[in-house]
Length: 140
Image (tube, rainbow, N blue to C red; front, top):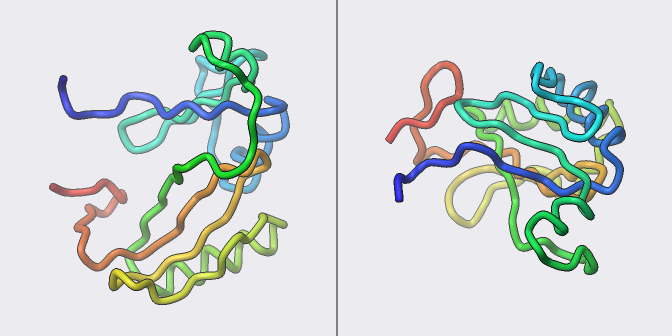
């Protein structure tokens, strides 16, 4: 199998609330393919999709019941500790759920976590071991 990701799909409780969150708080614009049933956001070479949790579970043939830690996080990498702190200040002003304030990490970087309205975790970090281009794309 080719090693790439095309879409990251998040099952959401109410499509309108997380769509509003990602549009107004993160400042992302839904793509033209978005409609009343699904929202897509263009990221660096991939799409983030928001789809009702019960319909996503039905499509996959699994139960939508359950709660708690989803055992995954998404990450947004920045170029410095200072950029991480600045973004956290902006997100806090916008009322974002700050799960963990940024701090020096055991692995040598600097990171913290925020959550979207459905509790999906976003790690916002500076990783000194990862190279990025000026657009934030990771370089091999």
